[in-house]
Length: 117
Length: 111
Image 1: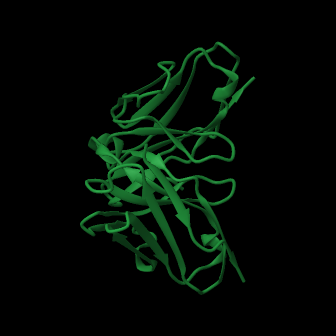
Image 2: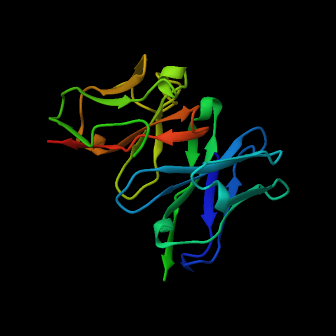
């Protein structure tokens, strides 16, 4: 079955850039949208954006100016880059597969990112 | 504040039926956008529970059901069990924001 695994630094400094990668294994990488979602501790879920395997991106307007996503089909990975970090970006970051009608049917386990001042 | 709203908490005794509402507007649920539901057990990633308003992925018990009407949707859980205690989120697409949006989440407590 398909599995997703996030990787990246757990601690980043304010004003710097966060880079996370999601590796997809055990299933097809093409023909899906690949998403990033985050969740601050004790709070709800926020969709960050998505990328298709052809590289088409859609970002949450609230984060659009700071977000870049990319995809590498040769190694079944997609990535998130978030710039100008503040404490408000501290959260668990999840990658998730987008199925039909925009549902997220497979999720990674999440990676904790803390922004320090 | 999310553009789709859920009650912060609901509760029920084992064996009972509970419902969780997800209220939107004409720019999301009322515009025809599908509603999906997720269950998040403590310390784990969310899990897709209902997709396309009322469809259950393979492996999800039929105790869970979803419905949609006008600008709102509901998740119903029958035969409540202790292991159902979790946070539940609805999700849809908002045309005004051009973004996928989540409800604020509802904490289900099994008494």
